[in-house]
Amino acid sequence: MTPFIAELIGTTILILLGNGVVANVVLKGTKGNGSGWMVITTGWALAVFTGVVIAGPYSGAHLNPAVTLGLAIAGKFPWSQVPGFILAQLLGAMLGTSFVWLMYKDHFSVTEEPVLKAATFYTIPAIKNTKLNLISEALGTFVLLLAVFYITNGEFGKEKTPIGLGSIGAIPVTFIVWAIGLSLGGTTGYAINPARDLGPRIMHSLLPIKGKNKTDWKYAWIPISGPVIGAAIAAGLYLLLSI
Image (tube, rainbow, N blue to C red):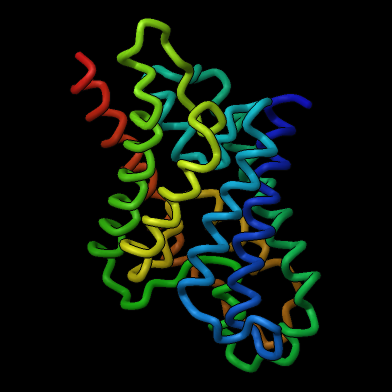
């Protein structure tokens, strides 16, 4: 197991379970159809838990380009490893969402609304507003990264603790992601992870999904840029407060 493979497998599982719970809730005829936002946010939180448990011992379980970039900006992760981690995360997201499509293929076929099919792949804002959608993604990711930096308090201890999702423990991260989804996720669907949105969005455009709509590429830059902005601000604040 290498860090690249760990990030690939961890992100695959993250998206398989994360987009899987969305499919279970919104697609027609599933056992979980119509069970609501609480189920979706809980499923996503537990998806993060599972991905972190798998990848944590080998890569620190970033599973998210915003986390990787934020840690690199804060000097907690080598820049030389950033491209490889992001590539693994993107490929994992593409693979994980493909498994969701395969598993729920019958339910995709009987679901009439194209927007519901798209929602199982990528994030869709409740109300399109470029500035506020961008702020929503940036703010949610800011909360995530700030928690990643401070949850172990390792930077203030005598022994410096490497900070990454794997090193802070899977359970605290689960609750943080759950809190973000419940409190901040209602506007954009809280991607807070560029790979989580971009990888599945690519697969939505490529897979033969019956009755799908055109992939919304005009919105795609927001769940990519917002998390990066939020991560950079969190890293900057961390560095400022650590002086």
